[in-house]
Picture 1 (cartoon, rainbow, N blue to C red):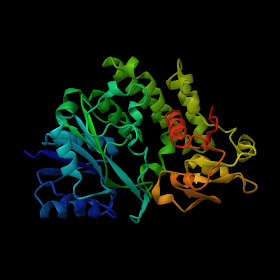
Picture 2: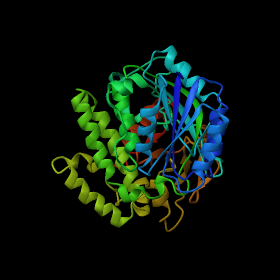
Picture 3: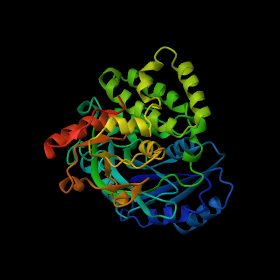
Picture 4: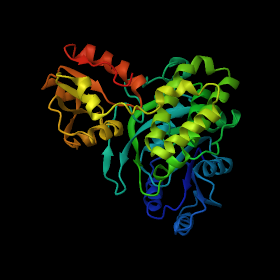
Length: 409
């Protein structure tokens, strides 16, 4: 029996699957099987998969009618023989030591989950994000070098390791014992599985290494149409809440749960047009009629316009913190460049020296050269967890710089 089962969900990925499988077969760790679940592809994907299976006996191909990535992962999980599981996406590619490092981490610590970091690449494989201190893993908060569990982070447990399943290796025994599977949702099926698995894990361990190259927002990915299914994040919130209640962990993790789903809902509705957003609001009140207002902080802040931002900053010279999609949309509606905005600070090294609208993006090091009057947080998705961290950081490292009041409150 193999030690590790690598489960790859695949749908119409003829352009990417060869690079994915080549990177899998170049792994320095060799005791693994690769279960490729062809989820009803209509292009040449199946032909490519079968050719790879003929070349390497560790590759198994399972074909099913199109049911979505979650169902494909469930199929792979049922067919898996390894002691440890890692779910991979067929359009990503991986560093050669990925499996070895995660396997060593999870076995040496007798952990239920081992986590690594990743970098974002575009459709051509060019790096677009690397070294982000809070995504996909929160480098400043995770206790590297020792194990941890949900009890160590009651307020932000679900915001520490990313909502994706593919940067984690799982002990299969934990998955089976807790009857974990991916629900039938479009988009947040992965988030739902990950949150439930993390809550079940008695021991989790993490490393900072970026071992996965993640193709973000590629053409034809679920991101291009998931706004049509934005209401599935509400259904996901109920599934996770029910699971936490059944396992007796909801009250302990209630703050972490709310923070995570407020952030997740913000992300989903940021993709919606006005019509889709109105449908989401109607569904929110239908699906959670008694308590939908707990997610009111996640709803759109349409009052934050370019003019509002200008008045909020006033005469202070400031840097914006975070080159987010939210602030990009706000700045795009500026009638004129605001001279009081000195630039944007972001943790994504791939963005440094580039511009967002007309404002240059810098690393945090710029604060050692240019001393602003203040900094304004513009990362809307995770403002609940980022704001206090930034406040503490500035007080310690740059006491003369003011963190402006949270614009989102």
